[in-house]
Length: 371
Image (cartoon, rainbow, N blue to C red; front, side, top):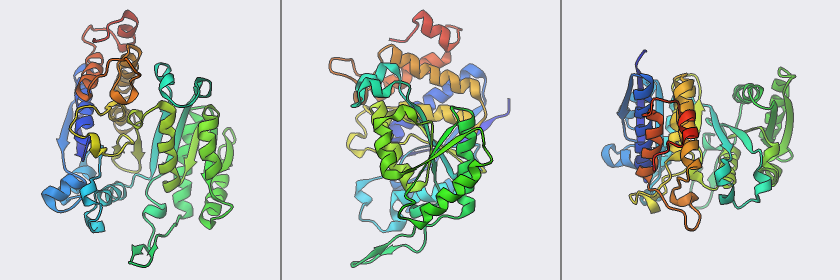
């Protein structure tokens, strides 16, 4: 099999901890399935500012564009909150997305039956929840010009072109064809001209997909519907800032931000990362949930390297460990034994290795869960 190079950007806070476990699981998958996988590390965010004076150094830039895929932890450090914009960790993240041209961010949200009780929502509202948020990632307020801030005023520009909307809309409609064939497009077309263009363009693209049902929701109603009837949603398509907010809101469905992965896709190497932030308050304590990072590694294999079987092995191992009662602090109920970051990663990796010689599904049914 052709070798693959993965640029690993552990980042800040809990990033190195959870990415370390994602790497452990990737190495387990490589061992089991005979994949030639090279994991090469580079700095980003506050870590990069400390070593290179730049949140996205030239060395990192060169590495990511030449890699087959990029695995990212998280960026952010409160000590740089007052730093000039050029030195903020988030500036490095935005520059990374623009450099890779990853305009479509896929954020799947599904409920593991064993975790229904960990959501603040009633169990009946969670039955059948399986949705995909498709967030436009390289346009909108986060990238628009002009922008700036003085002591008396600040400005950001919300801007989208028809071409930007069309390309991410097609990702959503193509995804819906592989799912339940419903796209819910989110905007604020009753107030914003940009949203009016968004709605017009998505409607036009939708005509090329007569087998997919399209509905439009204002973002405020979409936020309410996400928690009032989430099972009715299939593919949620939205612009950058709305998608940022709604996907974090969706974490309430599964009970923790630590559970959710993401894949950001464009014309070159994909970017794969958990949706959570750097969580500096718990960094270094070994209690962060690595499942979002590990599930992101599975998405890296599926979308970035086109390797479906090892991706399924990782996802199956995650399910198996949760079925067996494996819980990190953020998803543990009172009285449940809590696993640390490393222990959770080790359990998942052992299942992926398939040390019994049987597929993950067979190991699950036989009860061969590391304890």
